[in-house]
Length: 366
Image (cartoon, rainbow, N blue to C red; front, side, top):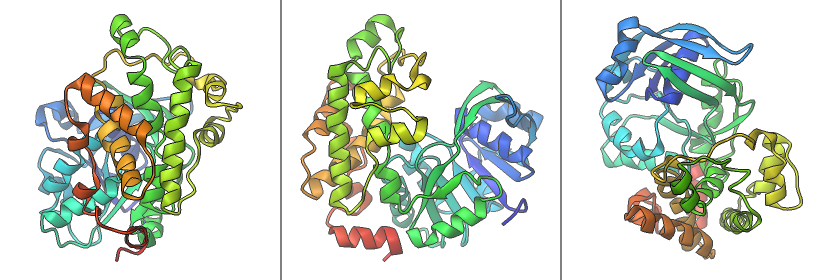
């Protein structure tokens, strides 16, 4: 596909607005969908978004084909559907989209967190969707961006390489080809188990937030999250969680990147232990802590990232006591049951599958 491809971006938050504007500036036909009409009223009135960017980055007025809160209208002419909302909304969106999807469309979760594509496809089937749709997920969001106003967005950076995998993996090449003109940064992520189990936010975000809970509440986040928050003891907890994640991946025949390997790959930061490597990452200096514990680092990363990884561990005989302890701390603090709310294997429809059955499903779809 070329610039003739038509995109629909689902979600008009920090990420969705930047993505829609950038795609439009690149010359693609773009429709923007947001569930709440008043939140995109200014964009609809202007028929586009003003995009600012880092030096040399994309900028200008991105004129949109349509702005809508009607899912049928949003999906009608789309070749590629880019979902850029918190992963806690994926189930609701899958249910809303199911009656309107058609053969040949691509739905890409930006990102899927862990088991996002598996969950999305399971919900589509539950809703009786018979369209031959390819569901895929990105390992992380390609932009560092924010909403700058009702019809304004800003991009701070664009990642150079983002793994993407389709479900099943034998469709990944088709997905990458379809979006290659817009996003040459997307690369083959092997499978949705690889993208989901290399989800580093699952390791860093919830534990670091919860182990600094008192400090966050007493200072309203007025400290450097990774520099002040990652003490030697906190880093040792992160190392335990990381070992559990890598072991869960290994039980599925997957060689996941360790946190140390990821820090070196993504930022060139090295160290003998995680505490040292994190403090050697210049980009972490100056990043403030969340101002509240009601933050996506817990509300999204626990149910959509930690819970599915821990569930896979429990199913395939891996000790995940560290992950379970962090999940339970989150349950206590928020007075909710993240195990019940999260992506457990029964919700994904894979709770009785063997490793070989799960592997065959993610690779070949059967």
